[in-house]
Image (cartoon, rainbow, N blue to C red):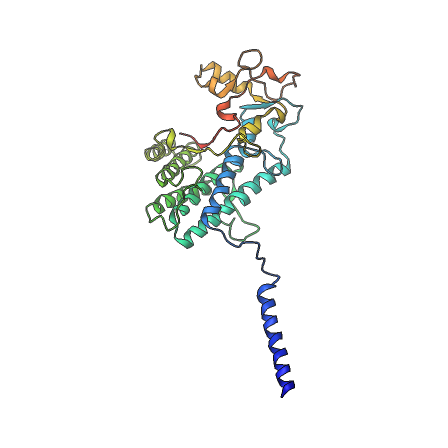
Length: 343
């Protein structure tokens, strides 16, 4: 009898210890790696990524230029006083493209997809609205940059998604924005954006105006597209504009940067002296001068010759880059905000 009791106790100890191991030592479950996050934690990094990498064109973790900065060289708004080949004469490496692609698809749109899924599951519709508007913005910039891009199959676990035609991408954007506007009429939910919303601090009326502004922008992008009538597209844009921004207080501006290491404005980082001679292009400066643009003193600083002088893109490197105009502090100050979509 005594032996039976002892064996019973040993058996019970083994059973309970095995259960404990299964519960607490399961190697397939990492207790330090969360599988989900509340909407309030998903939104801030998405806005920072969009503002810094897409609209701000800043260097990413991989030390590559963002979309807006590359386009600034290609549109001859900026020029780089360095020997060729460089980005302004279309030097774009595989690594540059890969890093941009990862920023847009993994760091931004994938996380916005997660934000939207969480919002839908929790019926927190305000966050659902925001995820759609920010996705529409990012997707619009992406298709403008690359043309045909993956979207319809891009976030369902398919490692080889089809590339949607650009025309279909624009249709998806308009549909997404219509859905965001409609969802904004629903009950906002139990959890609503506030200080985690770095653009509008939870003012959903302004997010709706943002959606209409994007609709107008993308209607205008199709005025010269095959199969589209310019007047029809313009009228659609005007109808959308009537519900969009009414002043600068409505614009989508990220005022999140500061005069502190690691918090600098992206355009300050893009155009700092340490970047090796980033100045304004002669194409841009000459256009401003020819049109007597009153904004020029805000946009540009005079060079050391006390005049507005731009550098001819891809021209010979000069020893004294200070003669050229640089971007003014309104846009490129250390704590300057970034206008994602200005009024």
